[in-house]
Image (tube, rainbow, N blue to C red; front, top):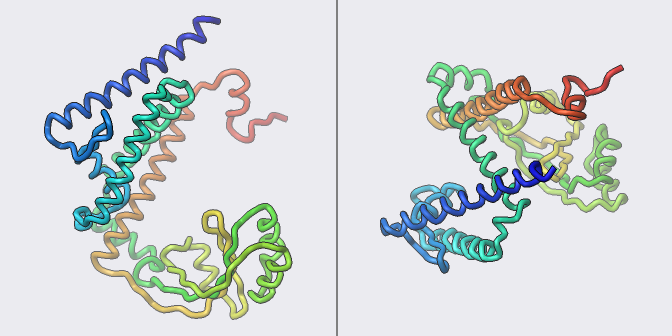
Length: 287
């Protein structure tokens, strides 16, 4: 028993040393090349760190020299380096739970990098892009901007039951009154929906709408009842359409690669003990 307990601890300790060592070497190398833009105690902020922050924040190259943007991004990076220094001083990186979280983050980053690279290796050609655009008119040539009157509210336990009870209601006034009576906070206003952002099946229902139809859609933690008041054609064509098609096809390719990976992983996986029953195909129950 003692051997089984000690081995994981030793492994985690080795990983902690390796992670810490990599950080120090990269800092020293950056400093020697004159790429440091700030220092926080022993921690350095390099130009590569800053450029990576711009990438994560989706700051375009033409905005990366604007003083206000640089001040905000670099300031946030300095705070993170400061807190990292405090955490390292407290030896939090050696706590098993924290180290496991670090290793999990590493796995997730590598997983995403592999999926993105594999999908990019299957980049579509012009014929594929043209075919995708032709097969998805609601996102391109037939794209429309729908003006809607909407009632939005946070989805909680009580709100979920409210949605189920009122999914066939034909009046926003009635929904407004019922939300008020149920004590569910909500807001009513005009808004807009892009047909290209809607699932094809749902947009098909909207296209076949009747004058009194009220629709419901979820967006994150919020729900929204809405009625279409008007529509305006907003076709997307040319290079803009091709760029969007590439993005959407890339996302579809990543999902496809994830599906292949899940299938292959399950073929290789050998589950032990009770987990073999839980993870068997189907619902895991035997008659």
